[in-house]
Image (tube, rainbow, N blue to C red; front, side, top):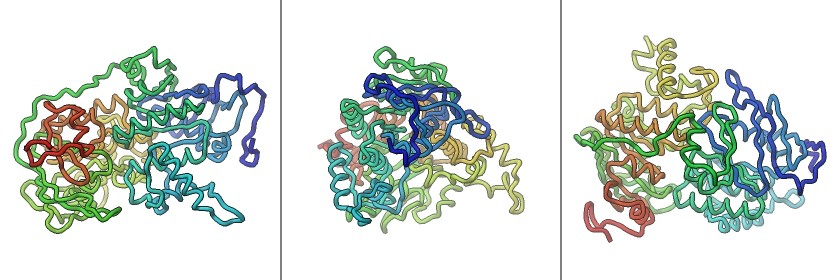
Length: 531
């Protein structure tokens, strides 16, 4: 074993006969105001896919960060093949053959995909980098596992889904034996998820051990052999997937029964709140337009979903609507009868547009601000929160605590918690609380339930429907087909930057929707016959 990386082994065991490749025994990890892991034991068998399930903030990512050496536990021990090990940092974990795909990507945005994958283990001879060799290996892995990334693209220019695939390639490149996938499907399309499930099964068949953290019960039921459930930092139990049901797992996770369908009455659309005319946005990656001459409308009291495979122009479409990106000449965005195409982001915010962004870290939060500061980011200048230029901190605290309670945003120190220290799901709930609470006429929601557990998804869906029923128009962008079919009143399918179909969720099927998303089917004209 590599003692240079401070990996220490004690005790002895016949590793070939020992039933567990990894054991985490009685792990306890504290943060200010919260016990994230409370005496948790986790045992992983060699060659199995083991799911780790729990609510947002249940302690899943913390436990994995302990295993990967990012955190040191206050109590507990870790064993590899029956031998006690000390994992002081990720280098120790890698030396032990433990790799991790992080929920929040660990990528250098100004580096290329290739540079990120080989960072820290660059192949070299006498100090000279052998980049061609590394590139060849990355391309081979990309093709072998169907990840299809461009090794020469800058990370800052690729989609969130491509960034996720880059993280997976980092782990495969290092040939790790124990593979931790922390919410790996949160930003993948249904097709990509199916491919990843196939990849995971293949890796397990090769003898690799996979620890799969997910909120998506269907995925766990499909791919996992066993599942360990955490709730509020405590171990609830481990079950064989073959012997349980989705309903039983959800009950173990949240402590109550969950509705898996969306209850909503028939939409009663009113006046048009958003009219998009001939919207065109240039691509940063290639010569074709990312959004090409797109026109559609959203009315008050309806949920219109833009469905499509990731990377077909959804990001650029939303950025142009909300002001994060410029539209080309001739494009028009009409909001409540006013041309807002060139208006500022603040103008759009203060005049009734709420936006749940795709990338919560880049466009949704200031991670080193407190939770309460993030909750008033777009409203701190209003009379409720300031007086003659001075922030009324008491009002900010009261408002934040009300939202935290209403939306069940969990954090170690309440309103004063540094947002960076919160779990990804609770960061997402904070954004949703802020955007839904504002007096909005249009809600632009991009993958609003990404990374949320089933209980939180149920609640957020209810809130989006309530927003619709209160008279707001909702433009939903989602990669989740179940969410598209359950929430939408109308579906617009986007393919290669163009709207190729307008569908009624009550009369279409998932299979038909999939054909439009893949470009195999297209309506000749709006409401016309399909090709």
